[in-house]
Length: 248
Image (tube, rainbow, N blue to C red):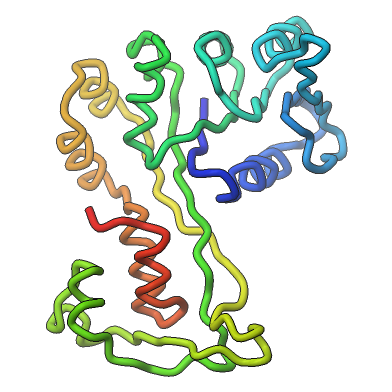
């Protein structure tokens, strides 16, 4: 199972569609159940949820399993029944791609525990979690170099000495960006790949701080770090970084 998480409108479904398009080779059966089907993917069977007629994610997923799929996409895990079937599907050899609402990769474990899913079965089925946000990019026509004030630095959790080599910018707004100062968006993400050590920590219900330490040691870059890296390059502003992510 691969989980994609983030708030509404953060591009989760687009990411899953991109993943399905990438792995679709025409030789395997891929079936999705979505609410709604947002756009058509050639060669992939897509089923829309229809709760008025009794077709929920859980019932649809059960039906899908009777069609012997190789890969499954579940639009969203909202309840215990859907979560249990998705986990069992992954444990029986299907690749399951799905989304869940959580703030970051670590909050996902609490979400599934709250649903009543057995932690051992869940982590056994799970390969990785991808958390993402969409960050607005500075308009290249009106962006100028700037020196942030002390208040903004404090709000961002930064110091004057820590941004010496940063290319910080701000945008006043122009006709190209309709006066907003921003033009276009890009995704920032953090990804947690589960291995035996991380699985053991989760099953033992270790504190999130311990999980974060282990994840960082294994190369995970957190959302805030990805956002600040864009600000460092002058591609977005500190205000936008603070709007989308939080100081840990």
